[in-house]
Each structure stands twice: as structure tokens, then as C-alpha cells.
Length: 295
Image 1 (cartoon, rainbow, N blue to C red):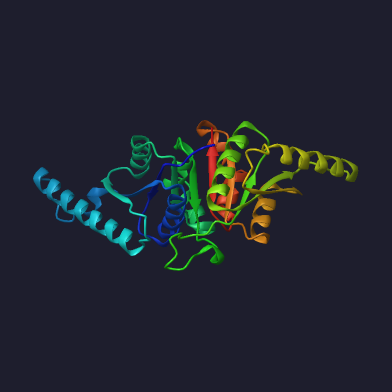
Image 2: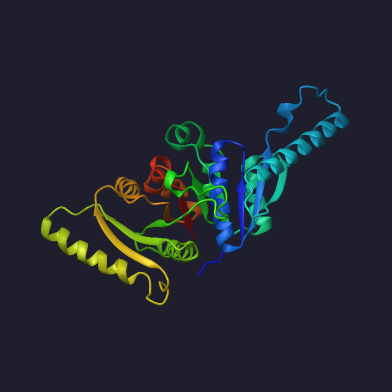
């Protein structure tokens, strides 16, 4: 069973960063994990209105901007503070994606939590930008967070910032799907959540084939998580028919899911496994955070 001992949450101080940080803090609280807040000044030279080409001037302005960024990041952490959660604040300057990935590697983080801009924002800002590149290249799971549904938010006095009570694991019975199931069970147990296992049938035409296929898949879902592994976790199974991404999104809304968990086929295949396919569309169009797990 995977353990989450450290979580990296890059922030740019937007509302999307706040949403991501809420989820990151909740998971850090459950796993008793180290939480790292990162802000990247990029591009650093864009703020140098007074830069005259002198290297000393450059270094002085750079130090000033870093100091201001550090103070702003610490203020962000204080503003959204909950007891028992004391994040480490790191400010860097350079290429955003590279610094996120290099910090994740250096700190050996187990999870990256990032905000996304939703439907219109993903189309305009995510493609070819930081979140997409991190999703493609990260060695650890990545949790992409849009604005969470109203019912998952907690009160200001609750040590758990976000309540993740209903989780949806989408599986195709592949190796990467199995890896995702390990994270799903772990998170469901830590958060005391109900876990629904979903498989979507896309190519069944005749009624007799549909009934047989549905029964077979339901049995596979039941057997996909061993009884000993699922101890202490409420697990349900569901089979739906249609376009995978549409059924996932629809079920997540209907059942008021707080988190969707999906496996992808590794970093080298993310171009086809996420972007333009089921996982990407669920991230882009769905109503709740999506955890991507790849091998």
C-alpha cells in the first residue's frame, strides 16, 4: 500500500492555488505528511524595470524579488493556516515546470497537488503550460484540483480543510489501473471515504452481450481488490455504458464525488493517455479533483 510522506503544492496565489492548497493540506493532515509550498518567480527579469544591464543591479533586484516572494508565500500560508499543518515555504526563480519537477525530485515527494483553471481556463491556459507539463513529466502522482464542490468544504475551525468522503476509481484492469487502485484504497482508508470502482463499457451493441459483459465486469471489479486489502473501507462497484469520459463525469456529478482517481500509461505515453483522451477530458470538464497515477 503506497504511503504519502511528503506533498508538494506549487502556488501562484490565484483562487486555483487556494483550492489546490486546501486539498493538499487535507491529505497532509490525514497522512501526517510534510507539506511543501512552492512559488516560482518567472520570468524573473520581467520585473526588472530598473535593470540597466549591470550584474550587481540584477543580483540586488533578484534578491529583493525573492525576499518579497518569500514574505508573500508565508503570508499565504498564515492566511490559510490550520492547526497541526506547518508547511515549508520555498521561493525560486527560473523555469516554472523545471523547478517544480526538480524540487519534487530533490525532496522525493510522493504527491504533487496543483490547481487547474477549469473548462475555459484549461483550453486557454493549461494546454502547453505548467500543469500539462507537470502531468506529463512527473514521476509521482499528480492531483489536479479545480474549485471543489460546496459540500466538501469544512468550517474554519475544522483541522481538516476539505472532506473527501466519496471517491471514484476508474479502472480498465490494466497494470496502471492496478497502481491507481492502490492509491485509491489508501486514500479512502485514510480519509474514511466510500470508494466506488467504475468500469465503462464502450463497445457493446446487443442486449444479450450487454448483460453478459456487465455481469463479467462487475465480478472483475469485485475481485480487483482483495478482501484483506479492502478491510476498513466501504467499496462499491458500478458498470456503465457509453463514452468513458462522459460516464465518469456524469457519475461524479450524480453521486457527488469528492475525488476521481485514474491510472495513465506512464510518462512516455501521456501525450496520448491524457491529452485528447479520457483522463484529460475528465480533468478538463469534470466537477471535482482528479488524481492521476502512472507507472
